Length: 59
Image (cartoon, rainbow, N blue to C red):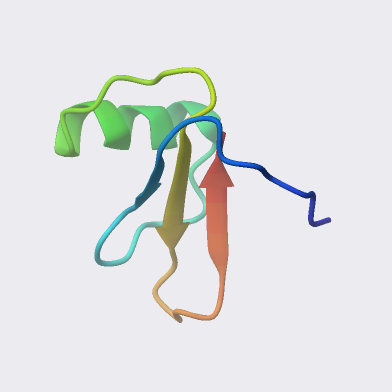
């Protein structure tokens, strides 16, 4: 399902591939540990899988 997202915050695109089997907690840990970013309201983080034809977003 695609929603109309009007950027109130920043949009981050994670470089490389990420295991898309991870849930919300696992992706939050990736953001905090690997990228050193804090989770903020209205920030959108996009992750790409190994096949590069799917994205997973964390808002």
